[in-house]
Image 1 (spheres, rainbow, N blue to C red):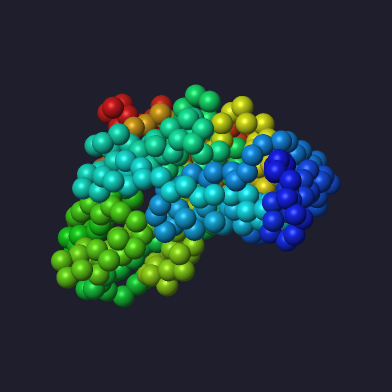
Image 2: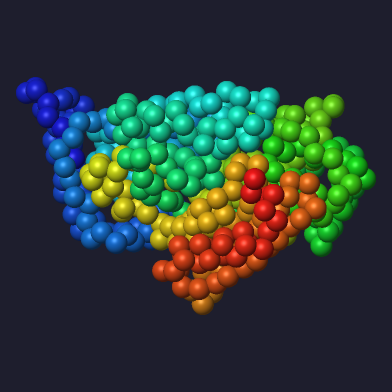
Length: 369
């Protein structure tokens, strides 16, 4: 990428100096060594990042919640560590976009259009050219994206597990019986039918009350005098916000199957934007790509509505095989079906599709209504 500037004195910070830095982007990706595993970009299929002429800054769309902004800045940190000259020329500009999912707090998503409401306005801004790419929590991104928009990149997964956060009045914690600390008929706050179905399957005596909002809002509701006895949150979000200590119990993903894509950040771009597709391929995390492909294929095969409790969690085993667990349930916990498959990571899409078809075939038809 490079930027044209009008002639000016070449001094640090001046236009000519910035143009010189921007021109270096062409060379920055050529043969650039990929970073190691962990928080750094992993090896991608492309041998180099090709540079193209386009104007800067690149506009990054995101929701405005503290967690969404953290994820966006983390992503931009990966890009600029891979290609430092992009940082030097201030190549990125954040655009916080209010979504329908953020504005509507008094109803369940299933009642107002599903989890796609967290991305609708961001998709529109991307399609209209008001932003160049967008950063999402992958679990909030619908399986079928609007025409002309593609998932270009998935980043290293944070811990995918759910956490039980306890309020006042709960008993001692027994890791072997994580819900045993909740008093009889206790109120548990959550807006997730996936979490609701699994906790009611384990403890049918419990009551469910709706809590929506960002992580901080839900924690404050838990601490209120009239708050619920407990709530459930993604451990990934707590960790990213420095709130991991709030997790009273971290739930085994086989006992509380996470949402598909939980803990993964995904980046979308326009399908015809070959420059950004090329750049983003360089920071794609191969493990995150494999597990998210399996989980999203599972969702697509089940084709459930936002009212259908569905869980999907894939991980790579020590022998390199991909292990995928899928779950379908009734919201009241009266039915719950959980199965697993494993196979080669290259077969991630097939594994997800086969497991989803198996779960759908052996579940009551009314679950998908």
